[in-house]
Image (cartoon, rainbow, N blue to C red; front, side, top):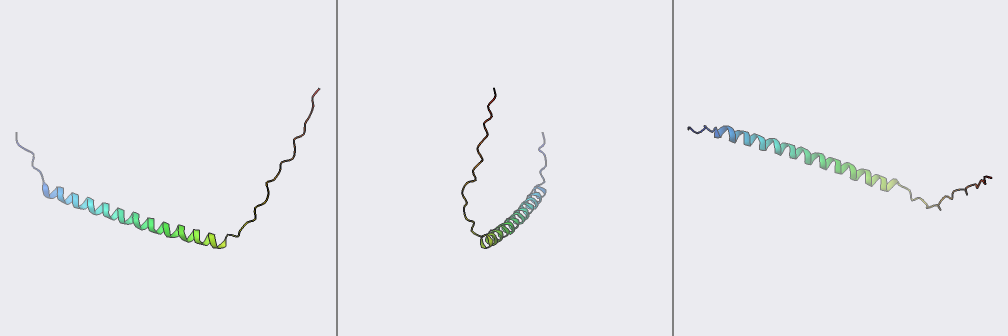
Length: 71
């Protein structure tokens, strides 16, 4: 039997290209994460500044149930 010819250059080129694609996706994901983190922190900071302190009111009591007697 003859062994199958392996195109090492093609495999190496595909490996390089896949690594570049994975790195580009990682950078894009990290940039998006950083952008969303900044947005979240800015929203939290603005809510903390503008949120007034609410006084705690007592619990609202329900009116008592009417008892209807059936004969």
